[in-house]
Image 1 (cartoon, rainbow, N blue to C red):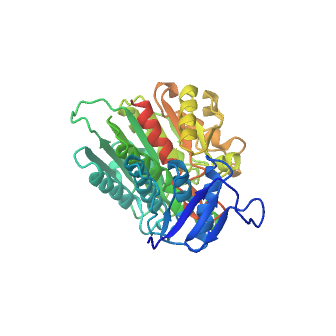
Image 2 (image 1 turned 135 degrees about the horizontal axis):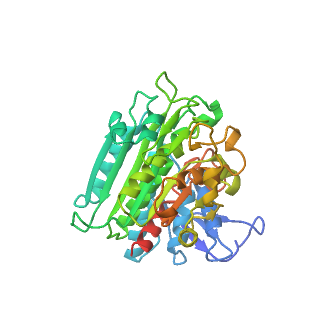
Image 3 (image 1 turned 90 degrees about the vertical axis):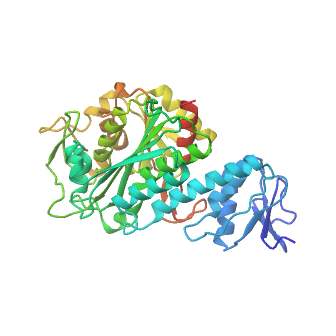
Length: 432
C-alpha cells in the first residue's frame, strides 16, 4: 500500500461540497482536487499551494486524469523555500517523467540561487556556482571565462565595473560557452545576458528598508537565463549558445559610483548617472555589447529591472520589449505555450531619447521617482543603445514575476523560476 499522501484529480464536483467552488475534498487515503475543466492550470496551482500551506508532505499524484501541465501547475504551487520533499508524479510515460524532472531540477536550482542570502550568493560565488553547475550538466561542451575587478576596466566593461566598485567583493562578468558541436569555429546561435546584482542597496540613491529587504533577488535575471539554458540543454539543445552574466553588488562606500558621474562605454556612448538605483541597465549594457561581439543572431536578456514593469503587468506576468516586433510576438507565443504569462510593453527607437542629459549622450534614468512615466519602456530604450543590428534579433524580458515578497494563493514567498521555460522554448525554437 502506498504510504504517501495520495492526491487524485477529478473533473466532477465534490460529492458533498461546502459550496460550489470547493477545490479539494479529503478522504482517509489523501485528497481529491476538483477541476471544472481540463486545462485550468491556475486553479490547479492554487490547489498545490493550499496543500502546501496545510503542511501536507510526501505527496503522490495518483490516477489517470493527470497530464503533464496540470502536474507542473500543482508543483509550482506546492514548492516552498523550505519544502525539499520530492513530489511523486502520476505520469506513466517515461518521456513525460523525464520532462517533468528536467523542469523541476532546473526550476529548483534557479530558485535556490535567487532565494539564497547575499552572504551566500555574491558576484564571484554566483559566477562560480553557475559555471560549476554547467560543468556537471554538460562537461564535454562547457568552457568559461571570468573577468573580475580591474580586469573589467582593462577590457572596457565600464558599466559593470562602476556599479560594483563600491563593494569589497569585486564585480565579475561570466562568459560561459556551451558548444555541443565539438568545433571551435562553430557559429554562436544565441547569446543570453543576465543581470546579476547579488544585492542592491540602491547605492547613494539608497532604498528604504522595506524596499531593500528582498534585494537578494536582484540577480534573478542571471539565475533565470542560466536556468533557461540548463532546461534547454536537458531538452536536447544542439546549437552553440553563450551565457553572459553581469555580477555585482550595488553598495555604498568611498569607492562607490555617485550621482553626476559620467561613464564612457566601449561603444563610445556616454551616460550620466542621475540615479544609482538604476544600476541594472548599466551592467546589462556591457553584457549586451559582449553578446553582440559573439555575432549571435539571437540575443535575449532578462532582469529584475524596473518596478514600473510590475506596476504595468503585476507580479504574475513578465514584460517583453524589443524593436524586432515579430520576434517579440513569437517569444510571447512561446511563453503562452509554456504557461508562463508575458505581455509586450511599448518600445520604439525614440525611447532612447527619453532620459536626456546635458553632460552626456544620455542619462541612466530620469531624476523622478520610478524614472517617471513609461519607466520600463525608457529603461528598455536605454538598453537598445547597446544592441547590434538596430535591435533585430533582440528581446528584453523585465522579470516582474520572478519573485514574490510574500506568499499568496498561487505562490509561496520567494523565487518562482517563471521565465525559464520561455527562455528554453525560445532557444529550441529559434535555433532549430
